[in-house]
Amino acid sequence: MSGNAATVTVLYPNKPDLTFDLDYYKDKHMPIAKKFFEYTSHTITQLVHLDPSTKTPKPDSEGQTNPYAIQVVMHFDKLEDFQAKRQDAAGMGEVLGDVGNFTNGEPVFLVGEVVGRS
Image (tube, rainbow, N blue to C red; front, side, top):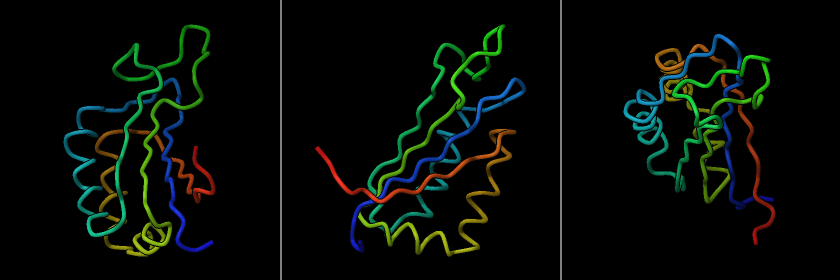
């Protein structure tokens, strides 16, 4: 299924001791990632705070909350573009090396090929 669009979702699991600096992510990390994906079919990145009632997502007093605190969704017109960039060890190293500057959480990556739209 070559040539289809792709959605790359990065999830940061919610945990009691999670720290996530939204301002750093928006002001510093997003430009690093944008530069890395420059010259590809990357079209948009969305940062979604899944618990907007707090600046840093935390479970409630009973430990109940969304299993993920932060969701990042990147859209590519071509899956191959993301796959090719993912093989760039130096570039990916720079992007992933910055993660510790804004969170103590481990990102979970979901890469999907778009097979339908409405």
